[in-house]
Length: 163
Image (cartoon, rainbow, N blue to C red; front, side, top):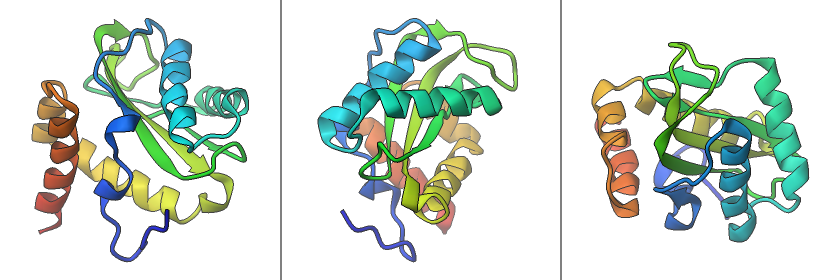
């Protein structure tokens, strides 16, 4: 998949196959494994264990829990074939180091191809960071019921904020 960095649309990386609205995992490591399974199945990660190890190593460098129930773990890895994100929502509170010291239930896992580390990764992180700074987006993120609703939320909010 070729992505135009000058006219980057978050809809280019979010697909139903990379979303779980009912994570079964109860802790950070298992959530990362569960979301990585989606990336492997979709063909975006070639070596699950290598990628999970890279994400967990990054987790040790600093907290990825942003507060308000959201975490954005990420791994730059040679195991990643296509830079993308997988999104998981859990009915359970997952313990995660976060800025507000509260658990999370929305996890956006960034899978970053080694060679995209300074290009697409930055654009993708920037798009998501802008969305996550929006209170309405966060509130709606916690109430989505379907994968289509989640994808629409990302795309439509992103377009609204760019106006």
